[in-house]
Amino acid sequence: MALALYDLDNTLLAGDCEHAWCEFLVDINVLDGDDFRVENERLYDKYLAGTLDIYESIELQLKPLMKHSPDKLHRWREEFMASRIEPMITAAAVSLVEKHRTAGDELAIITASNSFVSRPIAEYFGISTLLAIELEHTGNRYTGGVLDTPTFREGKVLRIVEWLKETDYSLEGSYFYSDSHNDLPLLQLVENPMTVDPDPALHSHAQAAKWPILHVHSADHAVSLEPHHLLA
Image (cartoon, rainbow, N blue to C red; front, side, top):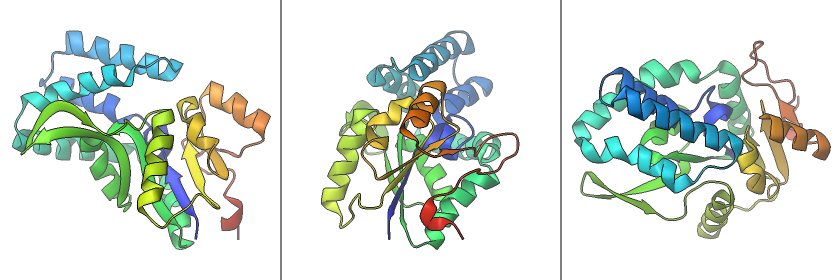
């Protein structure tokens, strides 16, 4: 049994869930589109460029969570899942998870998105272990604080190492699927780094390192290369 780790945004999803959540809140008039959309795009561009300050991103995501009641947030999240997230989930992405599940591997999602947005997505995939950015709350209200190390860049390595110490799992035979050069620290840690429709920087690295390159969200919606222990 191997450990199969998955990034979420642009890996299991054909899009970015936090970016989509902000756009959704603007579209339903919860957030001011003139200011919030510009800031959302600015931070997303910094993420793609590898220059994002994760705490700046968390601050943006926390604004609507702190302002509104849990009932409203959960109602909006249900609508968001149905209207924005489910269309981002391709059959090929589901297959990428199910092949490891069928093989008896342990599945986990590790994402730089916050757990409020990402947990129902993990549940949709039937993956119980989610390592995400955990937001501090008192009762049912978010405080604006962050719990533990954010799961971003080297933070993913720190969090997975902590999780391994708390469980009986190891990185022997492990896989990590990701699209982003931001995930190079964890990709370099696992035994089987798997790139999924990688961004240009990761694509170049994968070619040089001879890592597998999977096409999950391409026009053909087909995985071109599968993990070697899952081949028929």
